[in-house]
Length: 140
Image 1 (spheres, rainbow, N blue to C red):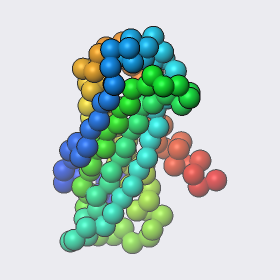
Image 2 (tube, helix red, strand yellow):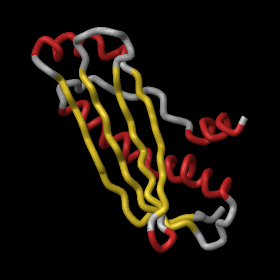
Image 3 (tube, rainbow, N blue to C red):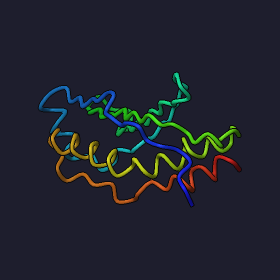
């Protein structure tokens, strides 16, 4: 199967790691196992048939408490779809699935580096994100 797009560039568009104070850091260090990874994918058309895809990971505590840290990365990818891509559903699959599978190793590594350098070296994402499954669930 040939790729139906070309990645022209990828970069960290925005990055955030916020821990208010020492008390928050110590609390979060004990409770970071409760944090959840959320994903958001947006795209916008650019000139010359290019598309910017922004994949955002947020790692946050959903529990209502005062002592929280906040972690977010917005990873941008610029693609050029192949000329034969005319159907909206084909483009959606490229944006929401194919590109995500390709960029995921870089995105995960970058985000884990932020978490580790923010004082949480024990963090790992045990389950890899199955973008194919998420895309297919979205269709049903």
